Image (cartoon, rainbow, N blue to C red; front, side, top):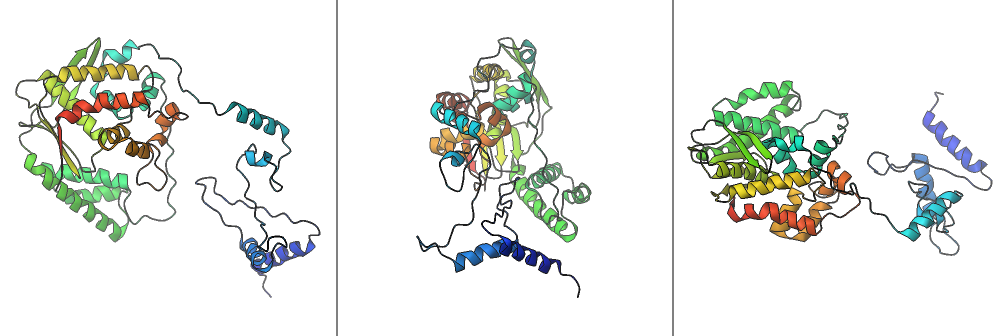
Length: 404
């Protein structure tokens, strides 16, 4: 005689069905407001849809009746004013606004209409790290430096279950740390307890297994870097001036034979640009006792840069580009630009508009880029010219080969 809430709910649903005289309207939330994924109806509603689909047919068509109507997210959707029998609206003002929009056509939003004047305070002293950040994402540099806008990226939701594998970004950071320990001669196994204490590893045996996997990857990568090691020179303070602008900073990792940089990950356009700026500084200043060759080693590729005679001219051009980029957003996107020059416009457009199934996010979805170019297609003539201006001098002196 105990109550069964499940049976009572089913009975109440059945009682609702038999009580209806002309119409019965059942609604439910069918899509998630977080990721747009499908949310199924309750069991009794799903059984009703299945029963009607298998037990009834339309007299005119001989097919099961269409009971389910998927409504639109916005009340001003054109589907509500297109004369559909099952989707309609009494909101006349929305219909008038929609008709006006359809007659005028879509409008293109421009984030900024005019070029801003130079800000001397931002140009008198440029930190080397700021120039690198600018080349990595000119839109983000413009928003941060000129407007003081830094888009907020909300943190991910806390997992309901304990993870049994490492997050990709956390694994990369741990791998970099282990490689540094190995190259310096320290014991990499000593990093296990600090990593576990910081919550980087899954619990218990899964954490130990994940650490060992990352350690093996770090040892393999360190083995590729070690043959290129040598005596490291003192950090080099650099100062380069051009047209009222002064670029300053410190270069580290310079060896007796070459300037060496490494990253235990796949090589990206940003990695190439970071080394390129430092290589230009070394060749433009040519300090005595310091090399003029550079080498970048990543998981998949190694890139070497030969000495340059026109490094000062190329570096001055990058500073001029920095000045322009603080006056307005520039349509330069390193990874898309690199693909345009090396693999063609089709590959570049695919990276710009990558869908949800791609192994990498769309470049256009980055917050700063979306703010500055959200309603336009910036892969225009200026995009092509900027891509050539930045990357063609690099391509002329760079030698890339696959890492074995």
